[in-house]
Structure formats: C-alpha cells, structure tokens
Amino acid sequence: MKPDDDDKALSQAYAALEHPLPPPTLDSAILAAARSAVQDGAKVIPFPARPRRNWGVPLGLAATVMLALGISLQLRDSEETRLDEPMLAAEMSAPIAAPAAPPADAAVGSKDEMKLESASTVAAAPPPPPQPEEPVTSSAPAARQRLAQPRQAPPAEMRPAMEPGLMESAEQAAPAALAAPEPIREAESVTGDAMARQEKRSQPALAPAAPAPQAMPAPAAAKPAAGRSQEQTAPALRKMLESMPPPATKPDATPERWITSIRQLLEVGKEEEARRQARLLQQRWPDHPLPRELRYLLEDAAQP
Amino acid sequence: MEGYHSSMDSAGGESGIPLHSPAMQPAHDDTALMLAYAGGEAVAFERLYALHKAGLYGFLHRQSPRTAWVDDVFQETWLAVVNARHDYRPTASFRTWLFGIARNKLIDRIRLKEPALLGDFLNEDDEDPLARVAADSRQEPASRLAGKQAGQALDTALRALPAVQREVFLLREQADMSLEDIAALTGVPMETAKSRLRYAVAKLKATLAGVS
Image (cartoon, rainbow over all chains, first blue to last red; front, side):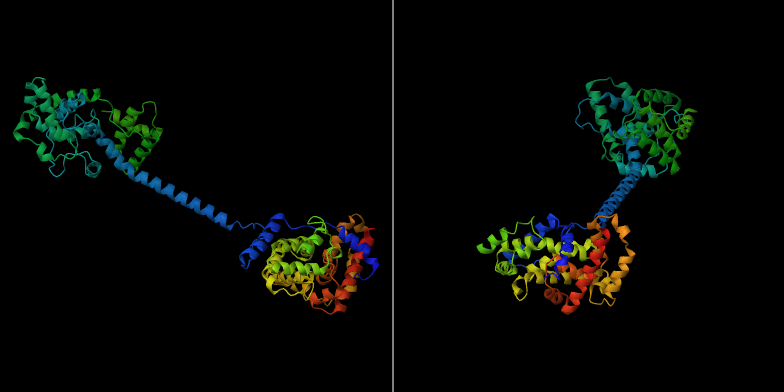
C-alpha cells in the first residue's frame, strides 16, 4: 500500500524512531475496565489515565486543618485567660479548703486545725462586720464573688505582716472563732473531750456547705475575745503565720503561668493582688527570679 | 477461539508488537477478536489491546498537540471500544474503526481545550503543501540538521508538518492503513489523502537528505 518502494527508507527511519508505550498503570486500568464491563455488563466510564496534579484538594484540606488548629489553640488560650481569675480565687481559698477535707467524724483534730483554730481566734479580735448573706464556704463561686466585691481592709498593723491569702482565711474563719470563746479554750485542759469539742466547733466553719448561722453561737460568747487588744494579737498572729507553710498553690502552676497571671492582674488594675501573687510566687519558687519589670512588686511589699 | 489465540501468539506478544502488525495478524483476526469480546470473551480484548496499543499510542503521541492529552485520549478511545462492543459491525477493519475513534476523541479534545488549533487538524489546510515544504526546507538548512541525529531530525520534521499531512503519514506508517481507509477515516477524497501523503513524505525525505 505504500506509494512506492522509494519510501522504504523513510519507513525504516520512522520505525527506528522511539515509539513510546502507554504506562503500565494505564494498561492495567484499561484491561480491568474491559474485564469488568464483560463480567458485570455495565458501561465503563472514563477514568483519570494518570494521577492528575490537582493540588486544590490537598491544599484545601491542609488549609482547613491549619485553620481549625489555629482556632482551637486561640480558643484554648482565651479559655485559660478567662480561667485565670477563678484559679487565683481558688488559690486564695486553698488554705482553708485544704483543712476542710477531713471527715466530720474525725476523733481528734490535726495540728493544722489547731493552728487554724487559734488563728481564727486571734483574727477574731477585731470582729469583722457581719456578712449574713455570704455563707462560710470555700467554693469557687464564693471566691469569685469575693474577688468582685471590694475586699475588707485588715487592721493597719496587721497588713504588712499578714499574707493576704491567710488574711482571707482568717476572715473566713472568723465566724468559727466566734463559736470558740477564748476564755473557755484557755481554761480547758487539752483532754480528749476538749479536743472533740474543738473539733465539733470547728466543723461548721470548715465545712464548705455549712450555713453561717449555725456556726454562730450566742453573741455574748465573743465578747471576751473582742476585749483583747490588737497590739497583743498581731505579734502572735505574725508569729503563727510565719511558722505556717506557704499557701497551697495549684499543683500545675508553673512560674511562667504564674507570672502571666501577675501581668494580667496588673493589666486589669489589681496591683495589690499582683503584689500578693508575686510574694506567693517567690515563696513557692524561690529560685525562679521575677522578671525585671515585676520586681518592684516585691520591693514595694518589702517596705513597711 | 483457540484459532485466533494461536495466531495471536505468533505475533510475538505485547513487547514485540511491530509497527506493521497486519503482516502477521490479518485484519479479519481483529474482527474476530472484537466479536469474541462482544460475546463476553475478555481475553479477546486483551489480545486486541496488545496488538494495537503501541500503534495507537504512537499515533496519538505524535499527532496530539499536547503531550499531556495522550493518555487521556488513549484511554477514552479504548473505553469507547469497550462500551461500543455490542454495536460493533465488521463493515470496516477494526484498525480503521479504532483509529477513527481515536481521531475523533483527539479532535474533540482540541475543540474543547484549544479550539484555535482546530483548523490545523480539520480539513481546512488551504496552503499549498509544496510551497510549505519548500519554505520549511529553507528554514531548516542541511548544515543545521547535520549536527542532529537523523531520528531527532525526522521527529522534528514530523512535528513541523501540517497536522493533516502528519495525520495521513502517521496513519500509514503507524497503523499501516491503506489510502482508501485513510480517506474514509479522515473524510476526504482519496486524491486529497494521497496528495497529503505525498507532500508529507517529500518533506520528510528532504529532511533526511539534509541530515545525511
């Protein structure tokens, strides 16, 4: 069928050219489609002959994942920031919350409870203004409410030496001190009965859900304690507070997060609370220096 | 079916498919294979595919204006064969039918993707082929071609041919089709097909002469 024999050379030259073959994957796909069409009797449809370099789907998927990850991280960070204030309140109430854990039927009070009892007794010397609407509890909502309210200023001579967290503990324990009149305590010997009685008296003040009116004895019982002078009680309280361990902090609170919380407190104008947290941080992490811009908090606190 | 199986085996298998397989594999065997496949013999299609895949792929590889289209048009052609198996009538040779499908698929692709190229692939070549051959020969002096391999020069010259001339040449060389079949496939009178082939061969010969 060739036009003439002179074209044989051209045909040979063309036959000598490189003639590409379809890729094996394409062979397999076509043959598989042909087999399935015979077996199933279905009409085959065209399929991608080779993997297309369509980056739209993977890129879109990757962008979606990155966007979701970024949003979740931002949400988590904002949630941590939002939780910082309640966590600080929980830290402040931790000293009283820890002793509240023992069961009510404990036969003998622990040493810490005795100290707390005495502390509350001493702190009760200036009777705090009655707060009947706030039950004695250490739950987080109550602590948050206390943060929102203007804090009651302790006596002037007690403020520099007293840990603010313990101050609040003392404030919370004040009603319990009313239930333990000082003359009775001093007169009683340390016997089993006395210890049990003290334990029983301290339970309403330490139990989180105990209503305040039940913990309040007759007002007359507080009169002898109120008669004590603040000059006598302040050194005793200072000495007792110094002997106490640093207030409990969140077990997972790292110095960095603590410093972040301090900065946030400063940002919202709670400088006094920031000072308190700075001191707590120094007590809890003495080997972790405060950032330079926050050290004034400790210096101010050191000045009487 | 055993008869065509044995005759197909003599063709040398998939790797040894020559460009001009009809000498060893008569057209009527293609028709028998296609009818057998339409009857449900999947192995008949495998033999058809082994016999014609190289010729068809080579034709598309050189005739397609875009290399990226070759695989798609190739597989679309074969799937069209699969889907049309029940409608196949042995009025023409299987090869003519197969390449006709491939040509139509390629033109469809050009019309869809790059319609500006469509005129070159349809029968709209008003240019005097001989004048173009002469002009191309002048543009590609022998001294420039001398440094190239003959195969590369031939390949380059083949791609430089007008699409309709290249198509006729490829159908003849790659598919070993007769001028009658080429004319029927491309939809032009036989004399037109013959002249296109003559012009294409003239240019390619000039290219080879320049190289040598």
